[in-house]
Image 1 (cartoon, chains in turn orange, brown):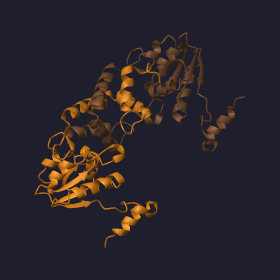
Image 2 (tube, one colour):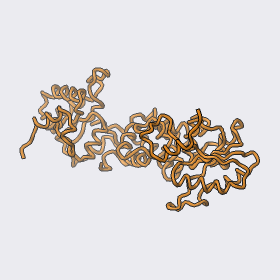
Image 3 (cartoon, chains in turn red, green):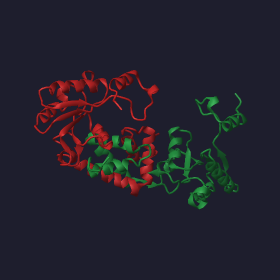
Amino acid sequence: MPAAVAGPEIERLIQLLARLPGLGPRSARRAALFLIKKRVALMAPLADALQNAMQKIAVCKVCGNIDTQNPCTICTDERRDASIIVVVADVSDLWALERAQAVNGRYHVLGGTLSPLDGVGPQDLSIDALVARAHEPSVQEVILALNATVDGQTTAHYITELLLDARVKVTRLAHGVPVGGELDYLDEGTLAAAIRQRTTL
Amino acid sequence: MPAAVAGPEIERLIQLLARLPGLGPRSARRAALFLIKKRVALMAPLADALQNAMQKIAVCKVCGNIDTQNPCTICTDERRDASIIVVVADVSDLWALERAQAVNGRYHVLGGTLSPLDGVGPQDLSIDALVARAHEPSVQEVILALNATVDGQTTAHYITELLLDARVKVTRLAHGVPVGGELDYLDEGTLAAAIRQRTTL
């Protein structure tokens, strides 16, 4: 579309919206139009919310979580089990585990996974801080909640090695059949793992 | 996810993003995290763009287009053929036609289509203004570029009746096979229309 049609300010808004994950150029247009039509109910609150969040965002100096306080809500929550550190690659994984209410421990966000091909080495991740935390006397277990991909598992192995001399139990997520999953759609690796790690009824 | 995990400002941002078309609760989370990580490169510009667009947005008093000037860029563009008025239901349809560079006339945005079931009557749409424009001596053709749905076609018929005494040619979009479309995926109505309105090679 020629820029002249909708005005430069609207075009700029569309361009920026199109950079969000999940929105393409076409849906960004739809989103912009939707915002413009709901100027009072949505557009103004969204502009304010962006400003507010921008001013308040902090990266937790303990675990690397993103929050509006530092240390973050989880690190300062006394009801959380301080003996468990759940290691995740990214804040989105932390959010996913929290949504599932899967674990009541604290977290450690690595900021990615080791990836030699992409030039991501141990110094690029928050691994030293994790090792230091794992040596604290209160910590008893480190759960490696990393993706079941090559990079995720490489990172898990690397961290396991580093934690050998810390007096902590190092565990990882179970492999197996996803809840609600059908066997004949699963890959061989998952099925083999599910059989190997079968549980007694 | 408990609101306590990500901070109220971030949760508010996620809630508002989730109301955009094309983003659900889950992708809104991803989008919020993406924004937070690109605070300088994307989040700040987006907040500014929303503010800017919000201040500048105007609805064209002539045609109902959304622009940052009033009358809009199209209505004031002398290179546009003022003898043709393209009637669309919504600004998004106008944008679609402009993207396709389908027509060089001016537009008229109705603001919807007649829909007795939803309680949308002629008085809810910009129909009187269209009839007035169609009576201007410079106007020779009114193209009804409305959806090929029941509501769209009802609206087209209604407008055609109203324009009987105006000295304008009233036309509508052709029905037929979409460019790139395959015959065996098309519905019977479209195929019948494509045969009926076949063109000579």
